Amino acid sequence: MEKKISPFFLAVLLLLCTALFATNTWAEDSKTWAEDIWTRDKLTGDWWGGRTYLSDHGIDIGLRLSLYGQRVASGGVNKNGEYGGTMDYRVNVEGKKLFGSWEGLSFNMHARTRFGQDVSADAGAFALENTGMLMPAPGDYHDTDITGLTVNQSFPFFEGHLGLFTLGKLDILDAVTLFFPNVAYGQEGFLNVNSMVSALPWFGAVQGLSLYGGWLATINKEYQTGESAIIVTGTENESTSWGHVHDSFDEGVWMAAFHRFLYKLGDKPGYFMVFGGVSTRDQPSNEKHDFVVIPGQGIKSTEEKKPWDIALYLSQDFWQAEGDPKRKATILIGGTMGPDNPQFAQYNFFANVEAFGPMKSRPHDRMGVAGWKNWLSDNFRDLVSPVIELRDTWGFELYYNIAINQWVHLSPDLQFIQNERKGDDLAVIPGVRLVMDF
Image (cartoon, rainbow, N blue to C red; front, side, top):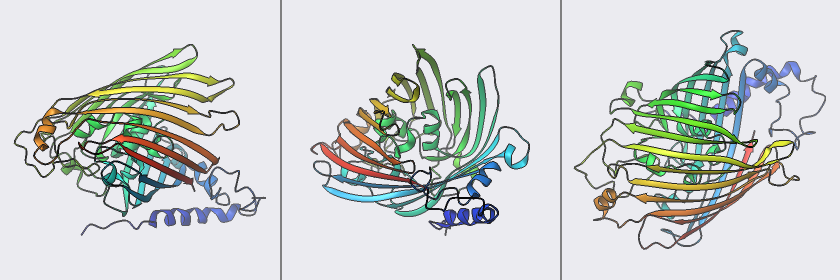
């Protein structure tokens, strides 16, 4: 039987380690632990100097609790409400600080505890109404797993750019936030996957959200973002397991690449992005996935093909507060196309508008509105039609992220979703998210 990591073992271990370093700095802290609780950036503060000591020596630790409550108030598959959440444990190690040498070397670990339930079964299989609850895997309601563990090496590439080589167990949602910095995988911005990126057609090719592999990327120093990358991974999902690395590549590989054309409109940055990917794995359009339930998975398909996708994105900042570039408003538009077989979703289009610090009096708040549509492939619909009649999906989402202080954020959210099941009414899904950084 495979051993699972105890849900809070990692957090307790990290706290114990920091306690070893805290004793030498206890007396130097002139404030009591509680005096600055409302103004500090983390609930548990500096651990009496332990956090700063570790950071000065190249070890940064992040602990984040995300709680979600959502309800299918009308429409959808069923009217129902659920509560759940995740605990994220992050450790970043900087080689130069820790070892005194080896510039650009770093190690990253991301583990998650997932608990409770979400309303995916009630909203619809392709609703994807809660990104944060996709990992480690739906169905593992009280489970802790390491979803990302990588070694990274940055290096000077060419003028104004850095190179970044990453190898290991890749947390795909972390990769998305690296290449799309505003996304924040459902913990800060939009909750719905469809509102963030052009996702659903890619799910026909990407077999998991935690995959062995690596990438080679270039980072533009001026824009502080990835400009281009080549990504290669295995095709077996590893979000809840530690299989042999070579087994992950037995069925083939998934390869993708993108290039972002960066520019400024006036003094406001923007980009146009081309993103393409292909899998060498032959698969049917109703291939089983661990992170999204595909209707008709029990139907045997006699035809298997290799999936591929091409996506285009356009992003533009259209407002910036004078003297404070962090307060801004952005628009992001994207779309994906893939083959009729084996993709279950052939086309996608989405657009979102977000404001960061929308009011001068609320500089750390965030708000957004998004709309999207997914066109399911005719091949997939015909394949599963003996079991269920399907239709194209679309939806809208609105949220407002209230920064109560630096370490706690509360976000009311409202979604309207037409799911994939013909006959289901429009789902109205109100929700709330509470995020706390420890």
